[in-house]
Every structure is written in structure tokens, then in C-alpha cells.
Length: 188
Ligand SMILES: CC(C)(COP(=O)(O)OP(=O)(O)OC[C@H]1O[C@@H](n2cnc3c(N)ncnc32)[C@H](O)[C@@H]1OP(=O)(O)O)[C@@H](O)C(=O)NCCC(=O)NCCS
Image (cartoon, rainbow, N blue to C red):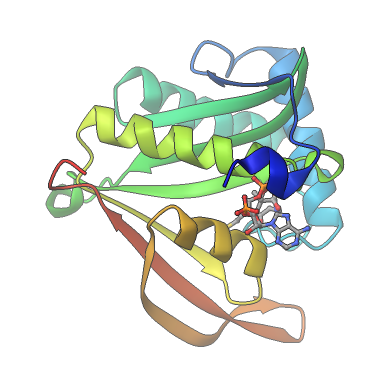
């Protein structure tokens, strides 16, 4: 079925770009910070309890960008025309025995742009980048109540391989940590 039928309001000006050349751009980093901090303030499960500071996001994107330049990460950005509406990245595992593999760590779409195909396009582009880079297994973990993200990942072929019950701590609340993997070996 064509996605346009499903959504009815797919983002028509959507572009997914390699952001490796933008990780030190104040404009890009500032807007990425706005998106990430806004999502966390609204309760998104992105690994932070409190919204990250601008410095934290700057440092994170610099780390990812430098790793991407070395071929050990991919950083992708989603634009609605010229407006940044989403970011995501994966990083190769540092542990020597895990180096053929990478972890998809954050996929974040601005609240106002959600539900219009941005997250799907961004995640699919990151999977494509992993395949092109020869990554063997792409892993991720998600909070057990993040149905939207888990549905998206499953629909792209990620399979749950384990879960830690009541592991993610947000104040007094506890949530499952769900581990998923996409095996890219076999040329599919
Ligand atoms: C998870 C997230 C990245 C999805 O991005 P998005 O742009 O909203 O997603 P899309 O519009 O591409 O939709 C992808 C899937 O999400 C689900 N989805 C989207 N909108 C939904 C809604 N309103 N209700 C329920 N599910 C929805 C559907 O399964 C959809 O699949 P479909 O294309 O077959 O309909 C986004 O919601 C987000 O940034 N959330 C906060 C941060 C986060 O949780 N990141 C993931 C960390 S593991």
C-alpha cells in the first residue's frame, strides 16, 4: 500500500541528508539541541532524564561526526525544505570483538513533524548507510513503553533478542529495556 494513503499527510518536502559535514555548524547543532531537549522535556525515551544541555548535544554530535569521518558512524538529518526536523545516528562498537557491528543510538523527530514519515525515512537511511558501510549487525535498545519506535523498528526488520525487566529508571518509574537487532549479513 502506498504510504501516502496510510498517512494522508506525508511530508512532501522531506529530504534525508548525510550530516557529517554539519556536526560543527552552530545552526545544525543548535536546532538539533532544540529538537532533542524538546522531546526529552515532553517525556521522550532518548536516554536522558532531564533535557540535555546545549554543551552535551554539541559534544555528542562532535563525537559522532568525528567517528563518521573515520567511517565508524553515520549521522543523518531530516529536512522539511530548509528546516531541520529530525536527526539520527549509529556508531560502530568500540569493543574489539564487536567491531563489525554498530548501535543505532538516537533517532529523534521534532514533535511537530512526527507521524509524517520522517522517522521511517531517517531510520531506513541509517540502515542503508550501515549496509553500505558493511556493518554486520545493527543493534538498538528502546524503552519498553515506546510503542511507536518499537513498531517502526520491527517494521524495518529489527528483531527483539532480549529485554531487561524494569531496568530503565526515570524517577520512581521503571520500564523494560528492549534489545533489538537487524542482521545485515546475507545481502538482503
Ligand atoms: C519514534 C520516532 C522517531 C518516529 O518518528 P515519526 O516521524 O513520528 O515516525 P513516522 O511518521 O515515520 O512513522 C513510523 C511508524 O511509527 C508509528 N507511528 C507514527 N505515528 C504514529 C502515531 N500517531 N501513533 C502510533 N504509531 C505511530 C507507525 O508504526 C509508523 O509506521 P507506518 O509508517 O507503517 O505508519 C518519533 O516518534 C520520535 O522522535 N519519538 C521521540 C524520540 C524517540 O522515542 N526515539 C526513539 C528512541 S529508541
